[in-house]
Amino acid sequence: MTKLHELYSQGQSVWIDFIKRSFLTSGELKNWLDKGARGVTSNPTIFHKAITGSNDYDTELKLLAKQDKTIEEVYEALVLADIARAADIERSLLG
View 1 (cartoon, rainbow, N blue to C red):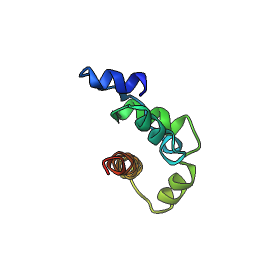
View 2: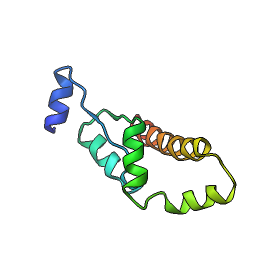
View 3: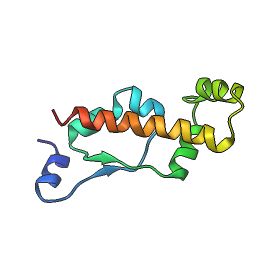
């Protein structure tokens, strides 16, 4: 049992306030959930840092740019994909 599991048994849920494509695809989120974190949060500032501070999104950004998407459509496509992937990872731990 980890300290995060102990906290949960005391009624405290630790959530990760961070999201980035490589965090999801590398297994890091799953590792944190296995250690007892209860979920992951996101907001526009977190996504801004993830998109502009890494090359995780470069390929998809180039693809979306070729499709003449608006900035809002590009942002929505990127973040909804990450949110769905995070939800799938969390759901997989339910059994």
